[in-house]
Image (tube, rainbow, N blue to C red; front, top):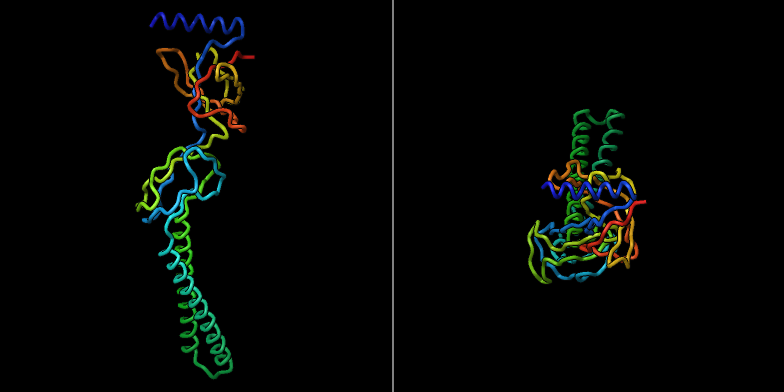
Length: 250
């Protein structure tokens, strides 16, 4: 323990004296990753992308059998249309009864009965519209779409396989920007937003990013603290899992 602390103190002193960062490893991890799961009990019909392939936000990644749900949508749509017709009819009857009531040819009780029928028709229409919306939502679950641009990391189901609600289907990552995770001595700690440079592939690739997160707790054994740096990766030169080193500070 004393030797580790002494070594770190020497490194920190050298860094403070010469303005350089000692050889500190960094590991690249995905900025975002997610497992997309089935939201209905259904059968997988097609994978639109293979492992490693890139996709855009909104692209359909997996298609599911939508035969039954398509029928449910048509049925719900028909019921919603029927409810709209009944509301229109109830509205016309109420207006007619209202005119008769104003001309003293109809009782108030009959007018209230027609008003009640109109309100009941409106309520039934609201229920039918909600059922129609619900059917369309369930139908949309037959398409697993990408929440953001990225790449397929792992496919967790096979085509023509029946899946259940909540079953993971595909794992995706966003590598348009990466997180460089490293542990640096406390003496070299910078604030959130500060720029840090790093090199990969024996110095053939250099990159820089801004500090996104700093752990609130240091490692008492090594005297270091975990830092996460957000590194832009527009040309996809970097890959999650790469190991590199921090460059000398400016």
